[in-house]
Length: 64
Image (cartoon, rainbow, N blue to C red; front, side):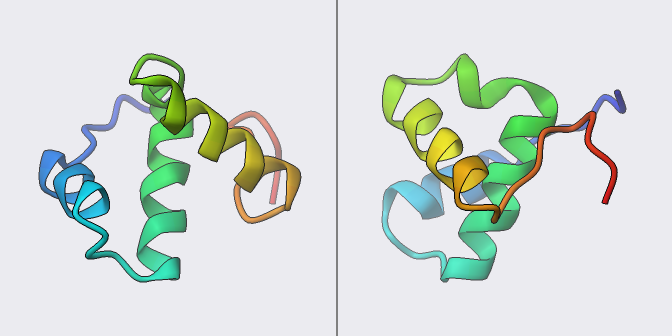
């Protein structure tokens, strides 16, 4: 898995409800890819699971 830094700015924007749907999905895909979705507070993990279940995000080991 590629070691990627997640933008703290994007996380703050998400917390402040400043991201549109596409930007939110992109952020959560990054959080899932880096594993941070499971290390941050519980609401991030729950949102990540929801986006995975709804097909908006993919597990990093899945092919497109």
